[in-house]
Image (cartoon, rainbow, N blue to C red; front, side, top):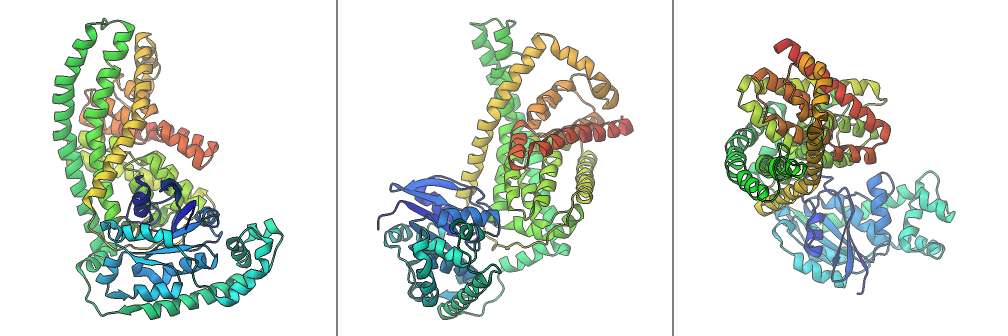
Length: 604
């Protein structure tokens, strides 16, 4: 069948992104938690447009994700509906709704391996006969069944629907654009009803009746096609239960964090970075590039200063990005990818739910907060999975204030771990206390309460190394593409400021704050100027300044609570509004220097 638009649709966390990657060859994030797909992705398969939509439980207009998915699905020529084989009762509701729209459908019955482990035997041929559309069993993470799905797309069919519902739809089909719109109007969709001036039931009675009949039909289908077998609890199911119980879940969480700290904060930040920054770039690359450039350009000229000076584009900038930050970024993203793909993140959300309610959030907010340790900018986008604007405001504020990104976290871990366990604990407690106090203040100031936690716990999985590596390298590349131009811009500005003597003027002007209040060397001013552009750039600047252990603690606390980077500010402008973005920016200045100064006055 000829088609122009193939739309991927399904419930959250069913693996749609893997099918999109397979069809289009375009990599989008694949993770094991609900809400991975927050943006619409576009690509092509055999000259047909392929569109990946956010995960939804139904094509209605109850939230932003459903409205976005609805607008795309009703225009589809074919829907590839990805269904979780372990949750047929839940997922087939959306399948039947799309079938009722009169759109040709192919069902990819995914996660067949996990259904088997759970003792479920599914009659795929029987399900295909019941729905009236092609049904293909798949294990997408292993590539099983994907070729059959591609072939089936050319045999997509309009499925079996309720005859009484079809009779009602026929009465209004000629008044609207297509059957999909007719169904949504019959289900009391307010925007479409207003568009065509049709209103069957202002109280939603049609929707209730249609949903009830659809649910009854799905229940009958599931009873006919699923055979449940008794099974013993697997190791994964036992571990899953231990992860969400406070008595066992908290020690497991601390063990995971300890392993991550040992690898990133001790091994990569000290041994690997010592080699890449000190030996490769400091000992080999920089002398080489200095000799090459000075063959043609005097080192003390303006161009020489910009290229190979103290803040040179070809010396300091390259060394910071590739020798210092990149190994740390790769390490942080590697572990984040493992957490994402294993399904552990939603379990952490369930574990810390009660704690986060103290700051006006529910456990689901821990997902963007943890992802913020990779990239705060991307984590701010992830806050769209939260249920209310109130929770998004609090989470974005905390992300911008107290969550260091991967590069900043790696450098900070390396600096603080070299001072000993006492300083590591002090740093962690201070940042945690600031996060809790600010969260509680926002909870009191903003109207409303934290919503209850409703989150699907996906099955625990052993992450696929290929996906973990692909995701890690993809995000590391994104870091270079995003940070590189900003670092270049900042290096040129600081070099010009130094050459023209402005840097000394600024250092003298802010000396009462930096020297008297924070009790740091005057040269630290440069690191904070760099931090205005990107916080990781500023923290990297601290590595070249001799500081005592208490001064290092003060500088790191201040830099961690410092203003969000330019990219994060731009996203906050987009996701919220300019008033909230400016409020976050100004508050970060005040809190960073306020907290840092108090610690300095006590310790130094």
